[in-house]
Length: 298
Image (tube, rainbow, N blue to C red):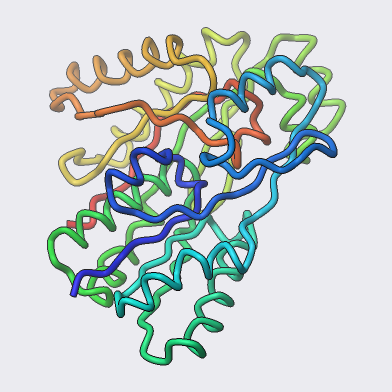
């Protein structure tokens, strides 16, 4: 019997794409000040939320993780049909959603003792979690059992890497990623942070002066990683991501693809750009942009 996949909205594939992939989505919540919380990708489109951020400089939105009831609502119809469930969650170091999903699975087993539920900490975030979900879909569609799919997915998280930058240091300061003095100095000097994701956490990849140079540096860091690690892209999946500016992303993505062609790689097939969701965007501001890759499961 095919298993069914559930993912929280931080995988950044978007509601329409998740529906196309037949993946159930559990939404994070986001709000400005004391306003009502919006369910990510349900109550408000990601683009609209980013535009609200851009229109309210100095106002820092906040997020809240899915509730126990949110996960139960996603699990219960599947368990009632006797379907095995694979739930993929945002990095547990970033959020309590993984533990909440575990609690929901445990509670559901009291109602459906035969329910087969596997809750997986992806140890990933944003585009990498999205790539991880896509690999789970490939395994499901290849008729892997739930247990076999979990085994095939387990080695993937350590292979994930993201290189990105953002335009506004104040969001990073507000989220505790950098200090007030560093943010003020960076803003004064027009310095942009270069940030990486590896081994389940964020790392500093340096700085660059100005947006144009920071984007060029992200590209440089990505290709340096490919060369240093001798990455065989036939064994990897690739994603580029952005916040608000689709036109800027298109130009950046083109430089990535052109560089891959220069190295003799086939141009990666990207059906649509990945818009980085508000779960991550509240910490980066509306201008994150970058590239990530993850090894294939099969």
